[in-house]
Length: 81
Image (cartoon, rainbow, N blue to C red; front, top):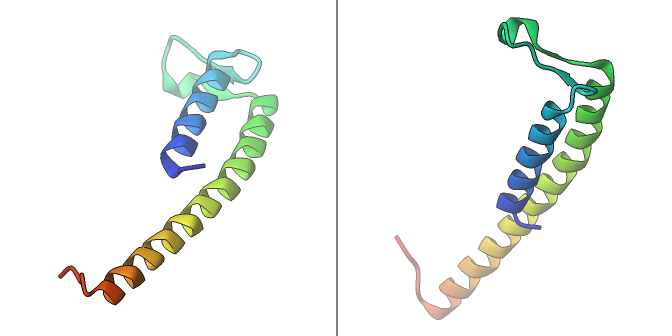
């Protein structure tokens, strides 16, 4: 999965969790009175564990792709400065 797709998924998941009062208490008074519930904290923890792994795998794949691309460019003589 590409990094942008992972970021979009993470944004959507956090937004949906925060809209559910089981996971997030949203006070109209303000941010100081709003908070994640214990169930919400656990859900966020699980979400971040899964997302973190996927982000690292996407970063590795991106680095590998760029390394291959640079190697091919060097072999072709197309070195960008």
